[in-house]
Length: 207
Image (tube, rainbow, N blue to C red; front, side, top):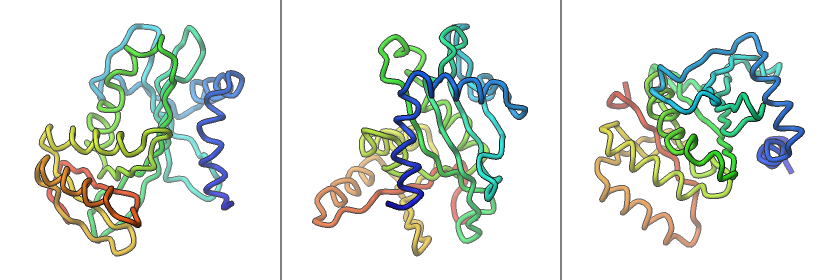
């Protein structure tokens, strides 16, 4: 198993375990580069919760990463966590492209706080500052549903949406909900399905 795969496999488990979740909460909330992004993301929840961005060096080989978390300051826990890596692809856009991985708590007591958090983080915050790369494997457990839902929501809100091939760096417009459904039908009917990826932008691409 590759190092990347090992990191990915440990990602959800480390947040599900109470001790590791508490340790992550402490690391995030006491980091130097922590800022509250509830207002710029247009996110609101009960006072127990905070939506934060943390700019810290996660690995010595990479500084183009940051984290976003919804934390509960009563439980001292993390209930939503996104790790964002910024990529530069000049052929696609002059803006950085944000690739992310997401975990969210399955605890029903946080359902209300989690209801709109994906939309606010992805489309209300990240896509306003970067091009958003959305992949089926970005979230753990229900990646295909997550991908389709977020791309559909982006179309509904008027974003420019494109399917994206990471190898050829080719962009193909997804202009309508019907086009998205056709793309999904084609992908899911394939005998050799590939991970679907989309770029979501507030601008027409490439630019």
